[in-house]
Image (cartoon, rainbow, N blue to C red; front, side, top):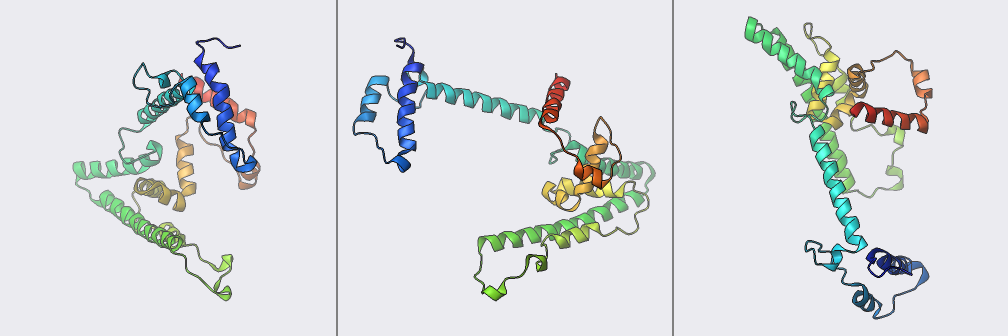
Length: 256
């Protein structure tokens, strides 16, 4: 039925039958008879996965072909990811979200270098100090939450609290971040600078305390611009599967 040298079609039926038997054995109770694997190896060759040598039988079977194709595809994806990483802003995953802080810092340094005015650099220092304090509270809350998950303690039935009575461990960090910074009169777009610096410190921290502002920054950086909307319309908006597919095709066309 099959061609003599067609190893792919010779190997697949028996391999699938053996795999199906082993996978379903916990439900059906079926087992391979003793000597079946030895007989299969003698007939179809060794299943040694070392395909480095061209003369190895493994380099011809379907499993090795699939594995080599998967390794090649994985390497291509890693190369694409490395090519898209920002090179100008180290320790920053998104150039748009880090840009506000970077521009404000560069401007403050330029003013000091040329005019010897410290007002801008002092305001930037106060902004960093403010965000650093909120970040410290965020790290403490994260460590505390992780410690509770690692070592749960037994409680009596009456010791459990209602979910509404339990305070969010990240609430203190969010409150500290949301507090206004005093004596900031020269730096423009303070909230964007705060959110940008928070993202530079830690993306998870930034999205925890400044999610809306980060979304605003990304919207402003979009080539299509932004439009005004109110919450009731925004929450009722849905995207169909065909619309999402058309967006992916549009991105591919722009990339090419």
